[in-house]
Length: 225
View 1 (cartoon, rainbow, N blue to C red):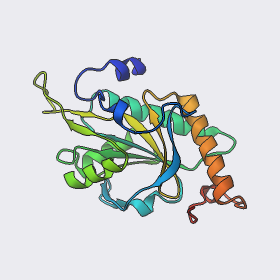
View 2 (view 1 turned 45 degrees about the horizontal axis):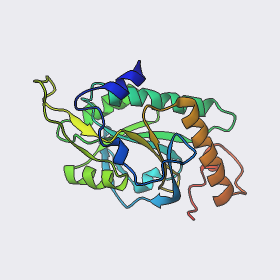
View 3 (view 1 turned 120 degrees about the horizontal axis):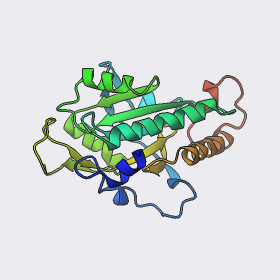
View 4 (view 1 turned 30 degrees about the vertical axis):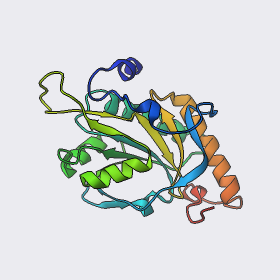
């Protein structure tokens, strides 16, 4: 049902920009696009639902699944967040658990107050951070992921006032604050989890092959290549 919603939803939460989100080869052997070389993210500052700041430094230490949306989105955003939660649950239950957080970035700072963001994050379980910034700040951060969005032209009067057309994809950011991959929607839970595990294993082998110890140490956050 959710996949039908994601593919067929009409209006502002469906994502007409998805096909142009990344100038990457379509033949990458994952459920989306894997960058030939991970892309370092430029410094940024967001405000979370807990009224704390979240910066590029806070991305370090574990893998992150990053999704851009807005809390008033009626279909694609909540459906995607549920799929992301399933991916995390699958990763957490695997033998080689991958340290993982979810970062939901609101493209609607005018309406998505800290209280709304905190409530939204709480719906999808622990380990979810919902954040936003100024309009300019969000736009600059979204540009780093090639995420495009705009207010949709209203087809009917909506109780929420307005919706957005936006790129629908989920990005994988490493514990070294670099962009590794972009997953297309709808997420294929098993395949995406396997892709994340494979990328994580390769990262660990290449960046810190000698790491041993607890779960958090597996992320190899302190060394960037």
